Amino acid sequence: MAKPKRGKSVNIIKNWRGTCPRCGRTGAKLLWEATEGDKKMKVCKVCDAQIRNKAS
Image 1: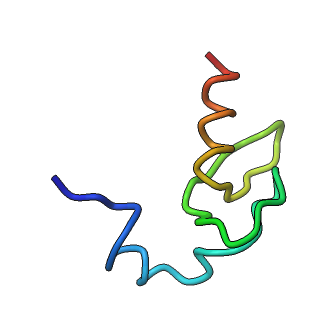
Image 2 (image 1 turned 180 degrees about the vertical axis):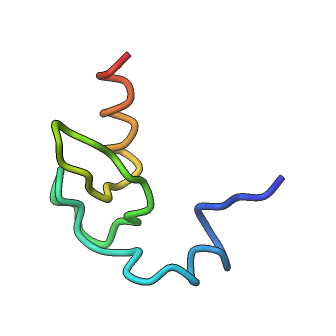
């Protein structure tokens, strides 16, 4: 089974690593798109899970 969030497929994406705007974690993969309120932002894996768990 393919893993779309790691390996060669990630290296194709531009600006995929940086600082998470939600938690401030540096050097994180910003591959998950989350919506808080009316803002769309790219967040790290941990913040994406927190947002999804909070919604359910």
